[in-house]
Image (cartoon, rainbow, N blue to C red; front, side, top):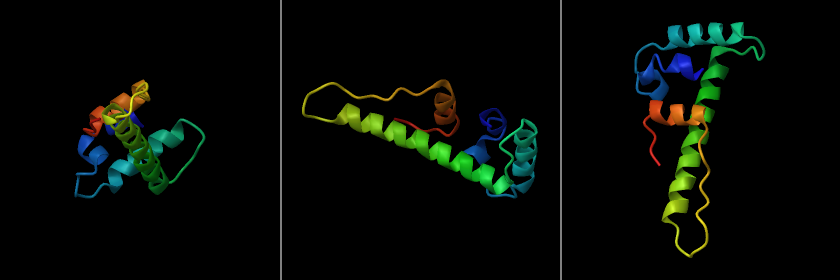
Amino acid sequence: MVDLLETAPDIARGLYKGDQSHFWFELTENLNALGPPIRHSTVWKRVWFDYKCAVKKKLRENKASMNATGGGPCRLKPLNDIEERVANLTNLEA
């Protein structure tokens, strides 16, 4: 999914205001061809939105941990490779 969304960064960031239905239809066809789960394009959009929000939450928690006071170790949650790509694609910052 991230590979396909990297070809359309404006759609991935939610900045594209035109008709996105053709892009999401193609993305749905490609993802459903890979096998289960088979989902509708609106569900794949929701999967992307939820994953993007999860990465944003992780970055926000890492930033709060870095800025926290009170001593003790810093509790950073490392991002995996896909989460790093999503953060870079959507211009999310910690």
